[in-house]
Image: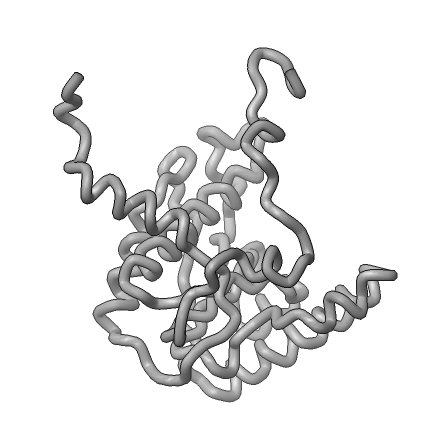
Amino acid sequence: MHNPNAYPPDQIEAVYRAIRERRDVRHFVPGPIGQDQLARFIAAAHNGPSVGLMQPWRFLRITDPALRRAIHAEVDAERLRTAAALGERSGEFMRLKVEGILTCGEVLVVGLIDRREDYVFGRRTMPEMDLASAACAIQNFWLAARAEGIGVGWVSLFEPERLRELCAMPPGSQPIAVLCVGHVAEFYPAPMLEMEGWDARHALADIVFENRWGG
């Protein structure tokens, strides 16, 4: 049966292709990306869904080289703390490349706004929906970039309060991501952590239930 709301088949496949081929990129080719491109990616993010239309996301473009280096130093310090917390897997973790802050074309810090407690619609029992909304915005950014052949890496290895201070964010706000954005020689054929043997994607049969959890 024809669905008048559906896109043409080639456009549908393009959407699914971007989803399949999106990668968390750590390896970049140095060089700037077009400012019109970056604006399109941020606009795509801003078109993301948000609970109660609170639009909790803010994007901070890092253009100061000294600030970029300071963010990299904070991420590297957290990398060491994370390795210590991993115990027997620490050596395996330290062999992984976990960011590309110094080589990517653009660095963005994504944060949640302050005064989020003022937004109750959809958050009275689940206040974390502000984070869920911002994650949807980042996914939009990611997919738009992938469609245009630009790599994005989401870095979450940092102490939020330290990064908030580095970026002069207001009290009550919360950084949730350092996005590395830039050109790549190629996209990984599979998620990098899967290729490195860190973990594997679960089968659909393991994650889809009916009526009862685990059923």
